[in-house]
Length: 114
Image (cartoon, rainbow, N blue to C red; front, side, top):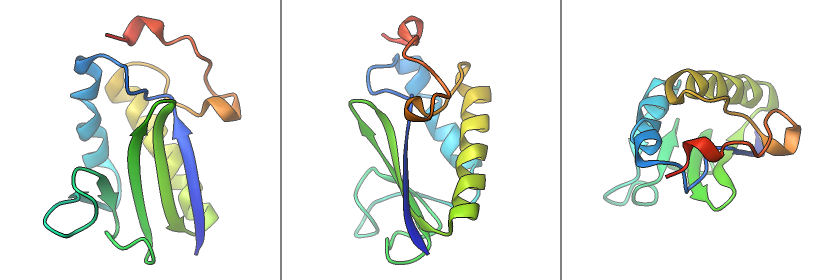
């Protein structure tokens, strides 16, 4: 397994209406185990597959430039999971979700901010 990461254009300053839908995206994804609590993972952080980052796992955190994912898994499985997340998020959130660094989306998301 290898360390993987990506940053999606789901920014911290999006409207409450958008952020209220994000857990729906999390729950639809393969491997969803919930938010960290009671000694399992970091409180409030979403996790997939395992709370232990040494095992096959994915976690996410909200950063100023977007929703940051950290994973420990094989590249091909990670790529498939990440693409499914972007597709599901686009459908549920109502705007194109992607990686700015990869040129998938631009910075033109002003209309969905608070």
